Image (cartoon, rainbow over all chains, first blue to last red; front, top):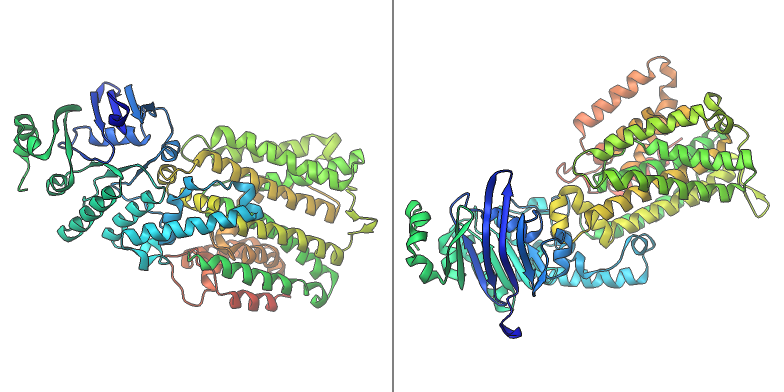
Length: 261
Length: 333
């Protein structure tokens, strides 16, 4: 494999056991830079477990996760942001006691340096940094179309707006890899179209996207590559067309779902 | 909170603090000035506890213990060993911070209310030490003959002089808190108080920040202890017992947790209400308790929320209008 073809993120032989239950077993796949990759599978397939291991909430029982060829599976979540990963939450984790723009500013945390002493004494370095944080956060908010809500309390946003805020907050760290946990869950068709446009636009700016998603219309519409899981194992991997025709996938997933894409 | 709210708080605080400066001149007698000193000292305690609890979301049941460590370490060093009170105070603040780190490091790594439990035990241990180390602390009779502060041969003893000194120290502490809240770390702290998982996923080193916050607020409580002991030249164990820590928590909630002005009102209640309720001898504890229940039941965002002209209950962090606070300060005895 040449350097140019090195995957941005690579999973090798990943397994996760909870007691005697195997949630993920010997899973390997990779995501090339600039790609949109979706992970699909019926409930209990191991999607959430995989997502948690990618983001650092859970540690793998066995196997490796590599970013740019370097192992990251032992890094705590906050260090993974530093190396270029950012995530959203399926069960939205908005900082409700803060304003919309402040939520995004927290997302930019890793791009700053000021510690407690700098903050307490309000040193000039801290002020310069604040200006940068504010500008970048405004830009991230504008990018998702929430620019006019910047100073509103985050608690006042609608469900769809909160989903967009999650994306803006993740984007504020200028990640190379954006991990989206069911970005379409709970959204009406119009909002799904909005979020799928947003994902495509961010991808167009060079951001690699890995999403876990139930909504087949969204997955088929935007993903260049799909990984299908069932019972913690890979059952298929390929383009939307390949996945759509795969017998294993049809049996495991589409057979039991109302699929109309 | 709107970002501009921090700038507004800064200006409102500067104006308010300038107004506080005339208090000794307006006070009818030294006793009232002395209450003003206690208000300043309690403001440090309650504002730092509010920073820890209201903004950072960490429950400490040993704020009084760090207040006491500040008082006793500085007091013992100067009263028993002849150390300069300034050096004694410095040693007390550093030692309190170090002890806070020792408590925070093992407990804050765990999820859940381990800090509350550990601090509960810690306050009990410290109280016992204050009583039992008689040789140093004077035991249950208290530590006596603690020297007053002197600055370049100028004595800071006496209520009015000490008021101005405490005014400076407390002002500095409040400005530090304002600076911290309006910063990268301050935002991270407010974020982690809502969701540690989300804050960590945004790159916030949650554990390290929680430890730093706990150490900082313990050091601030120790500063209050140093002021206290060198002002009244005495320290008694029950001032710093577990009940005192609980009272501080309750009064911070009463003022309005996570609001900038809450502690100012809380300190006023803490110092002023017992004076007012003195007339109802025997019933003061009952009335104090009842008034707490009433405020917390009907005004979940505390007195700071009560004074707000346009109440918005869902946003407890919105500060009261500055005018309301200034008016209140003018109404003080």
